[in-house]
Length: 257
Ligand code: COA
Image (tube, rainbow, N blue to C red; front, side, top):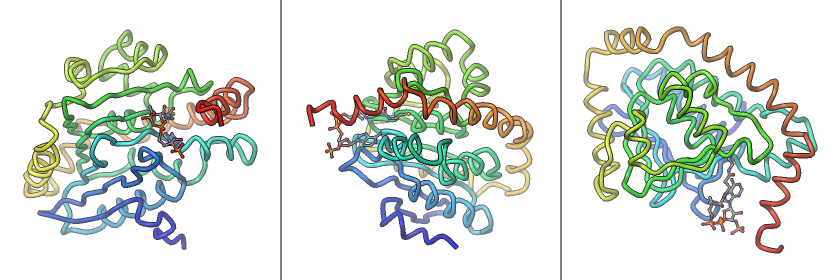
Protein backbone atom coordinates (compact mmCIF):
# COMPACT_ATOMS: atom_id res chain seq x y z
CA UNK A 1 0.00 0.00 0.00
CA UNK A 2 1.11 3.54 -0.64
CA UNK A 3 2.79 5.27 2.31
CA UNK A 4 1.27 8.72 2.97
CA UNK A 5 4.60 9.78 4.46
CA UNK A 6 5.78 10.07 0.81
CA UNK A 7 4.19 13.50 1.02
CA UNK A 8 6.91 14.24 3.59
CA UNK A 9 4.69 16.15 6.01
CA UNK A 10 3.47 18.46 3.25
CA UNK A 11 -0.06 17.49 4.24
CA UNK A 12 -0.51 18.00 7.96
CA UNK A 13 -3.35 15.99 9.50
CA UNK A 14 -4.74 16.93 12.91
CA UNK A 15 -8.02 16.27 14.70
CA UNK A 16 -9.94 18.58 17.01
CA UNK A 17 -13.49 18.67 18.31
CA UNK A 18 -14.69 15.91 15.97
CA UNK A 19 -13.12 17.60 12.92
CA UNK A 20 -10.21 16.34 10.82
CA UNK A 21 -8.10 19.30 9.74
CA UNK A 22 -6.09 18.86 6.54
CA UNK A 23 -3.48 21.56 6.15
CA UNK A 24 -1.64 21.92 2.85
CA UNK A 25 1.83 22.85 4.01
CA UNK A 26 4.35 23.41 1.22
CA UNK A 27 4.85 27.17 1.51
CA UNK A 28 8.13 27.32 -0.45
CA UNK A 29 6.21 26.15 -3.53
CA UNK A 30 3.05 28.12 -2.74
CA UNK A 31 1.43 24.87 -1.58
CA UNK A 32 1.44 23.42 -5.13
CA UNK A 33 0.03 19.90 -4.96
CA UNK A 34 2.03 16.85 -6.05
CA UNK A 35 0.77 13.35 -6.67
CA UNK A 36 2.02 12.22 -3.24
CA UNK A 37 0.19 15.13 -1.58
CA UNK A 38 -3.09 14.20 -3.31
CA UNK A 39 -2.63 10.63 -2.10
CA UNK A 40 -2.00 11.80 1.45
CA UNK A 41 -5.15 13.95 1.33
CA UNK A 42 -7.22 11.06 -0.02
CA UNK A 43 -5.94 8.56 2.53
CA UNK A 44 -6.56 10.93 5.43
CA UNK A 45 -10.07 11.66 4.18
CA UNK A 46 -10.82 7.94 3.77
CA UNK A 47 -9.69 7.34 7.35
CA UNK A 48 -11.91 10.17 8.62
CA UNK A 49 -14.89 8.92 6.61
CA UNK A 50 -14.53 5.53 8.32
CA UNK A 51 -14.04 6.93 11.83
CA UNK A 52 -17.12 7.64 13.95
CA UNK A 53 -15.11 10.10 16.05
CA UNK A 54 -14.88 12.45 13.05
CA UNK A 55 -17.92 14.31 11.76
CA UNK A 56 -16.44 16.83 9.31
CA UNK A 57 -13.41 17.59 7.13
CA UNK A 58 -11.70 20.98 7.23
CA UNK A 59 -9.26 22.04 4.49
CA UNK A 60 -6.83 24.86 5.05
CA UNK A 61 -3.42 26.12 3.94
CA UNK A 62 -0.74 28.36 5.36
CA UNK A 63 -0.65 32.11 5.87
CA UNK A 64 -1.28 33.79 2.52
CA UNK A 65 -1.62 30.58 0.50
CA UNK A 66 -4.34 27.97 0.28
CA UNK A 67 -2.77 26.31 -2.78
CA UNK A 68 -1.32 27.41 -6.15
CA UNK A 69 -2.94 24.31 -7.65
CA UNK A 70 -1.46 21.28 -9.30
CA UNK A 71 2.33 21.19 -9.35
CA UNK A 72 3.24 22.30 -12.87
CA UNK A 73 6.34 20.10 -12.78
CA UNK A 74 3.98 17.15 -12.34
CA UNK A 75 1.91 18.40 -15.30
CA UNK A 76 5.07 18.41 -17.43
CA UNK A 77 5.93 14.89 -16.30
CA UNK A 78 2.39 13.73 -17.18
CA UNK A 79 2.54 15.50 -20.56
CA UNK A 80 5.69 13.65 -21.54
CA UNK A 81 4.83 10.41 -19.76
CA UNK A 82 1.60 8.55 -19.18
CA UNK A 83 -0.63 11.62 -19.85
CA UNK A 84 -3.98 12.19 -18.16
CA UNK A 85 -4.59 13.45 -14.68
CA UNK A 86 -2.56 10.90 -12.75
CA UNK A 87 -3.71 8.38 -10.13
CA UNK A 88 -3.12 10.67 -7.16
CA UNK A 89 -5.26 13.54 -8.37
CA UNK A 90 -7.93 11.20 -9.80
CA UNK A 91 -8.27 9.46 -6.45
CA UNK A 92 -8.60 12.79 -4.66
CA UNK A 93 -11.27 14.05 -7.08
CA UNK A 94 -13.24 10.83 -6.60
CA UNK A 95 -12.99 11.22 -2.83
CA UNK A 96 -14.27 14.82 -3.05
CA UNK A 97 -17.29 13.59 -5.02
CA UNK A 98 -17.98 10.56 -2.81
CA UNK A 99 -17.21 11.84 0.71
CA UNK A 100 -20.31 11.62 2.91
CA UNK A 101 -19.22 13.91 5.72
CA UNK A 102 -19.37 17.71 5.35
CA UNK A 103 -16.36 19.49 3.91
CA UNK A 104 -15.46 22.98 5.15
CA UNK A 105 -12.64 25.20 3.81
CA UNK A 106 -10.73 28.13 5.26
CA UNK A 107 -8.94 30.07 2.52
CA UNK A 108 -6.33 32.77 3.13
CA UNK A 109 -4.55 34.15 0.06
CA UNK A 110 -4.08 32.23 -3.18
CA UNK A 111 -6.45 29.49 -4.31
CA UNK A 112 -5.56 28.56 -7.90
CA UNK A 113 -6.84 25.80 -10.18
CA UNK A 114 -7.91 22.87 -8.03
CA UNK A 115 -7.45 25.27 -5.10
CA UNK A 116 -10.64 26.92 -6.30
CA UNK A 117 -12.48 23.97 -7.88
CA UNK A 118 -12.17 21.96 -4.65
CA UNK A 119 -13.98 24.79 -2.86
CA UNK A 120 -16.93 24.27 -5.20
CA UNK A 121 -17.08 20.69 -3.87
CA UNK A 122 -17.11 21.95 -0.27
CA UNK A 123 -20.25 22.59 1.76
CA UNK A 124 -19.04 25.70 3.57
CA UNK A 125 -16.25 28.07 2.49
CA UNK A 126 -14.74 30.87 4.58
CA UNK A 127 -12.20 33.28 3.11
CA UNK A 128 -9.96 36.06 4.40
CA UNK A 129 -10.25 39.51 2.78
CA UNK A 130 -6.95 38.73 1.00
CA UNK A 131 -8.17 35.52 -0.62
CA UNK A 132 -7.75 35.37 -4.38
CA UNK A 133 -9.34 32.70 -6.55
CA UNK A 134 -8.35 31.80 -10.11
CA UNK A 135 -8.91 28.90 -12.51
CA UNK A 136 -6.44 29.52 -15.37
CA UNK A 137 -7.07 26.19 -17.11
CA UNK A 138 -7.56 27.69 -20.57
CA UNK A 139 -4.41 29.81 -20.32
CA UNK A 140 -2.52 26.60 -19.54
CA UNK A 141 -4.02 24.92 -22.63
CA UNK A 142 -6.19 22.70 -20.40
CA UNK A 143 -9.89 22.23 -19.68
CA UNK A 144 -11.72 22.52 -16.34
CA UNK A 145 -11.56 19.54 -13.94
CA UNK A 146 -13.02 18.33 -10.66
CA UNK A 147 -16.60 18.35 -11.98
CA UNK A 148 -16.39 22.14 -12.24
CA UNK A 149 -17.97 22.21 -15.72
CA UNK A 150 -21.10 20.82 -14.04
CA UNK A 151 -20.88 22.41 -10.59
CA UNK A 152 -19.74 25.97 -11.36
CA UNK A 153 -22.72 26.96 -13.61
CA UNK A 154 -25.09 25.55 -10.99
CA UNK A 155 -23.40 27.48 -8.23
CA UNK A 156 -23.18 30.87 -9.90
CA UNK A 157 -24.97 30.76 -13.27
CA UNK A 158 -23.47 30.25 -16.72
CA UNK A 159 -22.06 33.73 -17.33
CA UNK A 160 -20.19 33.98 -14.05
CA UNK A 161 -18.96 30.37 -14.35
CA UNK A 162 -17.81 31.10 -17.90
CA UNK A 163 -16.02 34.25 -16.77
CA UNK A 164 -14.29 32.36 -13.97
CA UNK A 165 -13.36 29.25 -15.95
CA UNK A 166 -12.78 30.62 -19.46
CA UNK A 167 -11.65 34.22 -18.94
CA UNK A 168 -9.72 32.92 -15.95
CA UNK A 169 -8.58 36.28 -14.60
CA UNK A 170 -9.27 35.65 -10.94
CA UNK A 171 -11.67 36.98 -8.35
CA UNK A 172 -11.17 38.48 -4.93
CA UNK A 173 -13.01 37.37 -1.81
CA UNK A 174 -15.75 39.99 -2.19
CA UNK A 175 -16.55 38.81 -5.72
CA UNK A 176 -16.66 35.15 -4.66
CA UNK A 177 -18.86 36.05 -1.71
CA UNK A 178 -21.21 37.99 -3.99
CA UNK A 179 -21.31 35.01 -6.37
CA UNK A 180 -22.53 32.86 -3.49
CA UNK A 181 -19.74 30.34 -2.98
CA UNK A 182 -17.94 31.99 -0.09
CA UNK A 183 -20.17 31.87 2.98
CA UNK A 184 -18.41 34.68 4.83
CA UNK A 185 -15.31 36.84 4.70
CA UNK A 186 -13.47 36.53 8.01
CA UNK A 187 -10.31 38.43 9.09
CA UNK A 188 -7.23 36.26 8.50
CA UNK A 189 -6.36 36.10 12.19
CA UNK A 190 -9.77 34.59 13.04
CA UNK A 191 -10.35 32.58 9.86
CA UNK A 192 -9.25 29.11 10.91
CA UNK A 193 -10.78 29.31 14.36
CA UNK A 194 -14.06 30.39 12.81
CA UNK A 195 -14.07 27.59 10.23
CA UNK A 196 -13.13 25.04 12.91
CA UNK A 197 -15.89 26.27 15.18
CA UNK A 198 -18.51 25.87 12.43
CA UNK A 199 -17.14 22.45 11.40
CA UNK A 200 -17.22 21.31 15.05
CA UNK A 201 -20.85 22.43 15.32
CA UNK A 202 -21.66 20.29 12.29
CA UNK A 203 -19.70 17.35 13.71
CA UNK A 204 -21.74 17.52 16.93
CA UNK A 205 -25.10 17.18 15.13
CA UNK A 206 -27.01 13.90 14.82
CA UNK A 207 -24.64 12.18 12.40
CA UNK A 208 -26.94 10.14 10.19
CA UNK A 209 -29.47 12.97 9.83
CA UNK A 210 -26.66 15.29 8.75
CA UNK A 211 -25.16 12.86 6.26
CA UNK A 212 -28.55 12.03 4.74
CA UNK A 213 -29.50 15.71 4.52
CA UNK A 214 -26.21 16.55 2.84
CA UNK A 215 -26.76 13.79 0.29
CA UNK A 216 -30.26 15.10 -0.46
CA UNK A 217 -28.85 18.59 -1.03
CA UNK A 218 -25.93 17.49 -3.21
CA UNK A 219 -27.63 14.78 -5.26
CA UNK A 220 -26.17 11.49 -6.43
CA UNK A 221 -22.34 11.60 -6.57
CA UNK A 222 -22.59 9.62 -9.82
CA UNK A 223 -23.51 12.82 -11.63
CA UNK A 224 -20.33 14.56 -10.47
CA UNK A 225 -18.24 11.49 -11.24
CA UNK A 226 -19.66 11.36 -14.78
CA UNK A 227 -18.74 15.04 -15.31
CA UNK A 228 -15.23 14.29 -14.01
CA UNK A 229 -14.86 11.45 -16.50
CA UNK A 230 -15.93 13.70 -19.40
CA UNK A 231 -13.48 16.37 -18.28
CA UNK A 232 -10.66 13.86 -17.68
CA UNK A 233 -10.90 12.49 -21.23
CA UNK A 234 -10.43 15.97 -22.68
CA UNK A 235 -7.82 16.90 -20.06
CA UNK A 236 -5.77 13.85 -21.10
CA UNK A 237 -5.77 15.09 -24.71
CA UNK A 238 -5.01 18.69 -23.80
CA UNK A 239 -2.16 18.05 -21.35
CA UNK A 240 -0.01 16.58 -24.12
CA UNK A 241 -0.93 19.30 -26.65
CA UNK A 242 1.57 21.86 -27.99
CA UNK A 243 -0.55 24.63 -26.36
CA UNK A 244 -0.23 23.10 -22.91
CA UNK A 245 3.44 22.24 -23.25
CA UNK A 246 4.20 25.81 -24.32
CA UNK A 247 2.29 27.20 -21.31
CA UNK A 248 4.05 24.89 -18.84
CA UNK A 249 7.46 25.76 -20.29
CA UNK A 250 6.64 29.48 -20.14
CA UNK A 251 5.83 29.12 -16.42
CA UNK A 252 9.02 27.23 -15.70
CA UNK A 253 11.12 29.77 -17.63
CA UNK A 254 9.30 32.91 -16.46
CA UNK A 255 12.22 34.07 -14.31
CA UNK A 256 14.57 33.79 -17.28
CA UNK A 257 15.92 30.48 -15.92
N1 COA B 1 3.57 24.30 -9.56
C1 COA B 1 4.88 24.20 -9.29
N2 COA B 1 5.57 25.17 -8.66
C2 COA B 1 4.89 26.26 -8.30
C3 COA B 1 3.52 26.42 -8.55
C4 COA B 1 2.85 25.37 -9.23
N3 COA B 1 1.54 25.40 -9.49
N4 COA B 1 3.12 27.63 -8.08
C5 COA B 1 4.22 28.20 -7.53
N5 COA B 1 5.27 27.37 -7.66
C6 COA B 1 6.64 27.58 -7.19
C7 COA B 1 7.40 28.52 -8.10
O1 COA B 1 7.95 27.81 -9.20
C8 COA B 1 8.47 29.04 -7.16
O2 COA B 1 9.47 28.07 -7.03
P1 COA B 1 11.03 28.52 -7.00
O3 COA B 1 11.17 29.41 -5.79
O4 COA B 1 11.78 27.24 -6.88
O5 COA B 1 11.27 29.27 -8.28
C9 COA B 1 7.74 29.12 -5.83
O6 COA B 1 6.61 28.25 -5.93
C10 COA B 1 7.22 30.49 -5.50
O7 COA B 1 6.40 30.94 -6.60
P2 COA B 1 6.64 32.34 -7.34
O8 COA B 1 6.06 32.23 -8.71
O9 COA B 1 8.07 32.75 -7.24
O10 COA B 1 5.76 33.31 -6.41
P3 COA B 1 4.90 34.56 -6.87
O11 COA B 1 4.40 35.16 -5.61
O12 COA B 1 5.68 35.43 -7.82
O13 COA B 1 3.66 33.95 -7.70
C11 COA B 1 1.86 32.45 -8.14
C12 COA B 1 2.80 33.04 -7.09
C13 COA B 1 1.06 31.35 -7.45
C14 COA B 1 0.93 33.54 -8.68
C15 COA B 1 2.65 31.85 -9.31
O14 COA B 1 3.65 31.01 -8.76
C16 COA B 1 1.83 31.05 -10.27
O15 COA B 1 1.20 31.61 -11.15
N6 COA B 1 1.84 29.71 -10.11
C17 COA B 1 1.17 28.81 -11.03
C18 COA B 1 -0.30 28.71 -10.72
C19 COA B 1 -0.97 27.77 -11.68
O16 COA B 1 -1.08 28.04 -12.86
N7 COA B 1 -1.38 26.60 -11.17
C20 COA B 1 -1.99 25.55 -11.95
C21 COA B 1 -3.46 25.75 -12.01
S1 COA B 1 -4.27 24.52 -12.99
